[in-house]
Structures are given as C-alpha cells and as structure tokens.
Amino acid sequence: MKIFSSKQIRQITQAAINSGAITLDKIIDRMADEAFYQIASRFNENKRVVVFSGAETAGAYSIATAIKLLGHGYPVEVAVFDIYHKMTAECKVQLNRLSELIPDGFTLITGQTTFEPPKLTKNDVVIDGLFGADLTRPLLGGSGFPMLINYINESKAFTVSFDVPSGMMSEWNRESLLKNMIHSNVTVAAHYPRLAYFIPDCAPAVGAWIPVDLEISDEITNTTVTDFHYIEASDIRRLLRHRDPFANKSNFGSALIVAGSYGMIGAAILSARGALRAGAGKVTVHAPLCGHTPMQSAVPEALFDADKNEAFISDMSVKGKFNAIGIGPGIGHNNTTISALENLLLTNSTPMVLDADALNCIAAKPSLLDNIKPMSIITPHTGEFDHIFGTHNTHEARLIKAVEMAKRYRIFIVLKGHYTATIRPDGKVMFNTSGNAGMATGGSGDVLTGIITGLIAQGYKPERAALIGVYVHGLAGDMAAEQVGEYAVTASDIAANVGRAISDILNSSK
Image (tube, rainbow, N blue to C red; front, side, top):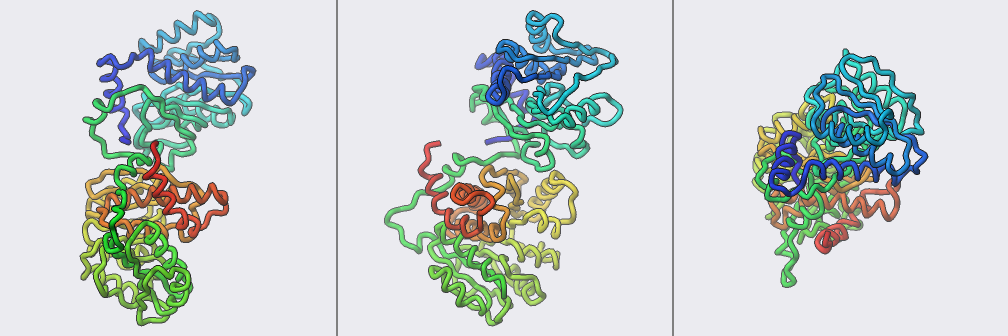
C-alpha cells in the first residue's frame, strides 16, 4: 500500500470528488462516523465530550462528530478557533448545522480573543480538530496553541484526532516538538496513513490509527508516484511462489550460514533454523569447531562445515557452490574474524545478508563498507546502524540517513524496529506491519537472517527476499505470541512458526 504526502492526498481526494465518486460532504460524514464510533464503542452517553475545532478540514470533521454525538445524547462542549477569519466553506456548513442544534452551546474564538479552556480531567473525552493535516509549519513557542495542547495532554483525557494529531506534520517533524503535539489515543485517517505514523518519534502522539474507506478508485492512486509504502499480507502473497509438487531439494537452492563463536553457537542454530523453515533446499553452517556437537544435535538437517579454529571463525573462504550467504550472527568481532570477513567481501560474488556481528566488524573497520557488493542486504537494529553510520538523535534522522546510505552503497538496508523499514538502493522505503513487542528478544534477528538467506537461496531477488522475510518473521512472531503470550516469546518460538506463517499467507483469502 502506498503512503502519500498530504499534498498528494489532497490531490487524490479532489480528483475523486471531481469524478463524482464521492462528495466532500460524504467524506466529512464518514470521518465523523468513524470518530463517533471510536467514542461510542468505548463510552456511554453520560461521557462528557469537549471539542477543540480549527477552521479548516479537521475542524469540519470535529464539528460533524460533535453533531453526531449530540444526536445520541452525549453532553458536548465545542470551542471553534477561527483566529485569522479564514474559515473554509465546509467548516462553515458544519458550524451552521451545529448552531441550529445548540445556538448558545459553543464558543467561537476569533482574532486575539482571550480563551479560557474548560476544565479537563482524565474522565473526559477530547476531540482534536485544531489543525490535523492542514498545519504547514511546526508549532513553536509564542502562540497560545502549544499551551492549549500541553493543557489537553496533561489532562490525560481520551483524545481522538483527525489525519494527524494537531501540532504534528504529516511527513517530517525534524523541527517539531513532541510536547507541542496532541497525544492522541486514536487518529482517524482519511483513507490513507501518513508517513509520520511509521516513525517511532511520533508514536506517543499518533496512538492507534484507523483508516476510513473513502471509495477512492485505484485508477487515481496507481498513477501517483511515492517513495513510501507499507507492506501487508496481500502484498507478500503476490510475491510468494507456490511450490512445484515435482520439485526436489536442488530446486530450492543451497544456503551458507557463517555464524557462531564460543558461547554464541545458539545464534548459528537459530539462523540455520530460520533458513530451513523458510524453505531452503540445503543449509550449510560454517562455525568454529566448538559448534560441531551442538549444531549437529540441535539442527541435524543442516550440514556443518568446521572452521579450523576451536572458538571463533578465522576463515570465511567459500568451499562449494551456494546461492546465498548469511553472515554475522554470533561471530564476534576480533581482528582475525574481521580479516576473514574482509577477504570474503573482496572475493565473493554470491548474494549476501550481513547482520549482527558482521555489522559490528564493519563498525570496527569502516572501510569494509566499500567492499560490500551492490544489492547485498544489511539488517541492523538502531544501535548497529548508529555504530556504522554515526549517532542519530531521532529515528526520523536515522531513516533519512538510511535512505542516503542505501543509495550511496547500492544496498538494501533492513532497519529493524516496530515498523521495520526496508530501504532500497533507489531510495524507496517499505514499512512492515507484522510483528509485536514480544519479538524484542535475543536471537530474533538471527532467525530473520536465516529466513532472508533461505529465500534468496530459493531464487528470490534480494528486494523480494527482504520484504517477504521481514513480514514472515513478524507474522511468525505474532503466532508465537498467540501461543505463549508476548512476554514469553523466544527466538526458537519464532523459528518454529515460520512455516505456519508462510502457509497462512499463501492460503489466506484476505
């Protein structure tokens, strides 16, 4: 699914209106319906609702919601801010409808009029229609709106916003302060999510986001180009291939996993399980001698190629033919291992996935970055990313840097997190939507390395392997959480559910 900018969404929506597919009044009504549902499904008619409305699109949505709540018996108070006397026509229509219901039941604030907000408590509901997606610059000190926003946030009232919480920009928020954004419990979005939803810096403000179907046809959106997308099961289903019943293991490729060191052989085991569960025809693990017995015992399906060193990997020379190589889980980053990795990067042309300690080796010797073959995949979490590319104070800054680095080195960067972002060499960003907090556990990334390596071994191109691997990994984590609960999920649970996750995607009709 595409993630459009606010400007693009306005153009798309206007095109739908011009085509006769929907009217502006119907859009406002549907947005208000969803906001009403979010409140009515949680609170009975005795709940006090306070509406803070602006004078543009979000204002029209919020006033329309107030009208619906009044019609169902909710006690509603409304404050409408038209500071610059620029109220839009659609907002005026909604205000006129409101005035017919409660002629003296709302406050209209214009010019520099002093406004004393009503007393709010955590027992109230707030509808935020101050700015939404119409904000064109960050809210900074010097105006009364940051004070009002802080007051609303401090009340802890249940808050519903439209498109984006007021004070937030729809895309980038480098100059915005989190404290000057409404901290919503629910954000109701007109048809499409906004880029800001997928950036962790904004998460405390966005809350749960709910898209509202406006029946906008694909004909309009297909021609609108964007660099940002979010990935769902239907997208992965189109990428996954059903297996030929007459195939044999040679049809599904050979994967090499370079992993493990003394005390970290578990990382090699988990990565091998990920590759096997993802469907690789043959998996070979290159690990130090100390890994022989545990590997052969825990993953008898994998071949074991012993390094000459007992405790760590000293040689990554590839012996044999492989379709994909996954490197890094648990290998450590001593000088001998770093030299072995450098030699592999210089001499190997097989598609590679670099994770964990392979990335720590690169951080220890940054010149290795220049030796990574184009179209390779690196899979850092935020700490590993910063070790390589420098410290970043915000997730937004880190994402921007990842786009820059993916372009520069012509690699895929899988930046792991709640919405794991796969950044392509052309700068396009794909946000993943599967997974849960229970996956924040040791070894989870090792399983992902194996899954992606196993998919490349089967002939999937790196971009598709990364997208499929990340989504399948997250879905396997969701299945594991259903079985044992988020607190109890282990990496082994995730690996055990990889096959179920792939089957669920292929066989689901959703």
